[in-house]
Amino acid sequence: MLKTRNKPYTTTIPADEIHAIEFENTQDKVYTDYLQRLSTTENLCLKARHDATNFHGKQVGHFFLGVLFGPFAIIGTALANPTPYSSSNTLLLSTNKDYFSSPEYLICYRKRAKGKLITMEALGYFTYLMVYLMLSN
Image (cartoon, rainbow, N blue to C red; front, side, top):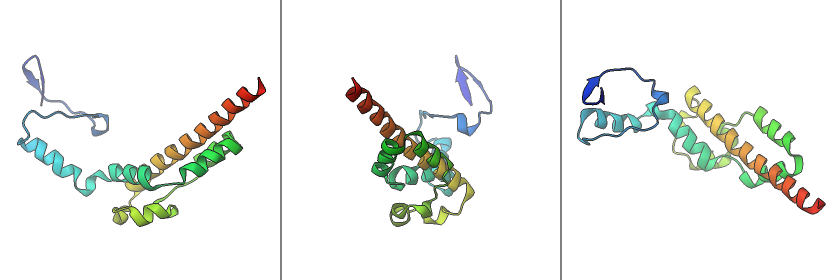
């Protein structure tokens, strides 16, 4: 139920388009259901992104790959298939090991892990370009 100028109406909004929800009453059933849903297995994508952000990859190594190989390192990482099993830190530190075989978990994990590593390689390549430009003048 949404309110606009004190006139309530009902509409359907896809869940992936909702970025924030503000509740006036913290005892409201909708709010308590929302909190319960966050803590259940339905939110695998959030758990996967958390694991990929905190535990996946050797960021410093990918930075130097970007310095040494530039766009070729970025292309190589874009073609790679990162999984929680390919990262020893994720295997050791994640509390979500039960979901490693879930397709939804793996899709979200791959997307975040690739994005993180490609960002580090792009920063390395950008650093190489800046040093090259500074030394060539």
